[in-house]
Amino acid sequence: SNVAALCNLGGMHYDAEDFEASLRVLDAALARAPSVPEVVCSRANTLHRLNRTAEAIAEYTRVVAALPGVLAYRRGLADLLAGAGRLEEAVVEYETAQRHASADTAASPSDRAATLSGLAEVYRKQGRTEEAINHYKQAVEQDPADGRLLMNAAVVLADERHVKEALPLFRRAVAARPHDALLLSNFGTVLHRMGEFRESALLYSQALKLTPGTANLHYNLANSVMDLAIQTDVRLLRDSVLHYEECLYREATYPGAMNNLGNALWRIDKHDKAL
Image 1 (cartoon, rainbow, N blue to C red):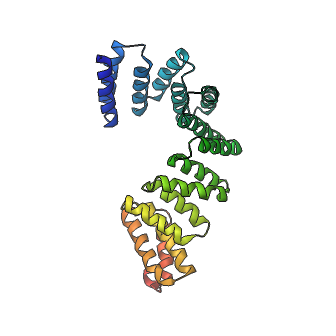
Image 2: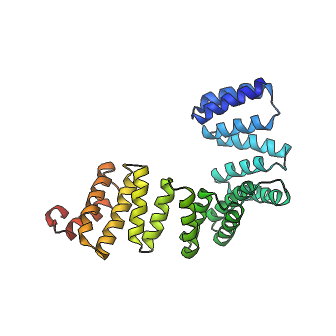
């Protein structure tokens, strides 16, 4: 139909991040089919990407009022509310979505996991840490192969000092998403905190290959290499210096980089340059 063709075209513009064009096309689709929820929600998602989130929330609210039992629409509304900082309202929608998901035998494990993880993230923002952890664990049980979900759960566990539980989730996440630079960097950060400097440096190096020239990765890699050098072989300090210098080349005011570079230079007896 014409409406389907317009929606497909709007989706193509959306995927190309031409959101103004996407909105124009979806407006035309909506004029032809004002009550089709897929069109309304697609338009709402586009409004959100144009920083018109209040309008997007109003559109989703209208759809959810008409179709209260459709999990995808209610979770979409909850996601928008959470992103807008309307956490109490988001909790209500996520909890309602969770009840629907639990009762709906047709709901897929990934749908259930997305609802649980969305609720977990809002709980975390509210400081309801134990509830957040429990819901992330439930989400992982529902969809144990989702690498991004595994990473998010592992980060929360590590931040709350549940490191022994976080490590196997990180390793499973890396197995699922070996080319995810953010995942590799997050895992490297946790290992660095644990004093596992060699593996931490390896993960930062892998992330840097995927996103060359990233200042914070050069900085984090330099830190891991410097700590490894102090622990094992001071000759590695020269590698650390190179990465600090590269970090500062990319971002001259990167916090801590100049101080740490001076420290590394002092340790390899380049006192004048360190000063």
